[in-house]
Image 1 (cartoon, helix red, strand yellow):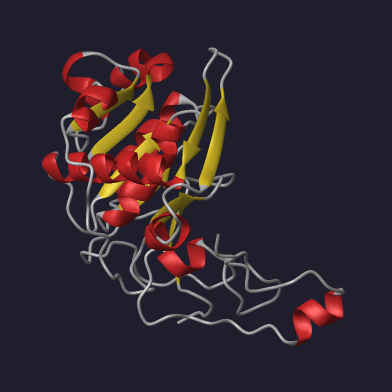
Image 2 (tube, rainbow, N blue to C red; image 1 turned 60 degrees about the horizontal axis):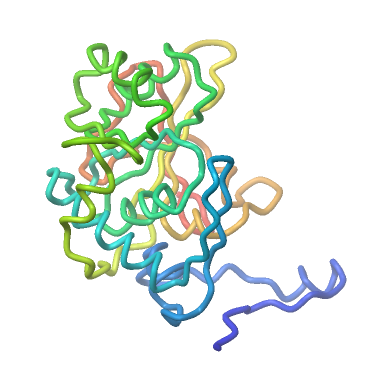
Amino acid sequence: MRDYRTLRPGTYQEMTSGFRWEVPASYNLAADVLDKHEPERPAMRFVSDEGRDERWSFGDVRRLTDRTANTLRELGVAKGDRVAVMAPASPEIAASFLATYKVEAILLSMSVLYGDDSIVYRLNDSGARVLITSAAHRDRVAALLDKAPSVEHLVVVGGTGGESFEELTGAAADRFETPATDPDTPAQLYYTSGTRSSSSATTSGPASCSTPPASGPGSPGSCPASSGPGASGSRPSSTAARAASTRAGRCG
């Protein structure tokens, strides 16, 4: 199988002296971490407290991801829309992340440890259209949706009926053409801790999502706040939120 590593282990000096940020003209995170791999190559082993013990190949993950991307399209998700995900890690949640990148929407990943007010704030401030959660958290988040009117669809991993992730994706096609997105296209929305006031929003482009931040001013992850974050030109509704577009390997 092909070895995709571009760096080899060495001393700190060896690793840093020749390093350069290489920003491609076209980049989609899902294409890089999923689509390019051989379908039979092992991708994931998932073991859960509920007794699931599964081995997934890249082909398995891609089929589920493409079904999820087609499902998001069927739900009306378009480029620049926000898709919120609040659930423990699982193959279905991994597919939801990657599918969001594929449809050029913006991922809002929320911890299940957030309080109700923090969840409602993020949903409203981001204008999320879809919320994906797990059966264990379904009732809790469903009770909050009256306070988050932007959310049009609740999708539940392990759910039932029209909310069921499994039923929705099972009815979708298992092929989705990943677009050749610009590396500066917003891909993921983050919120600060909000220790002094309301949480603030910041976005990352698809290329910066795939690379670790370097230290020091001017490195990815340390960009000053600028306008953003929506690909469609919109931004979070709260005037307290300062949005920053973190670009791939540079600030601007």
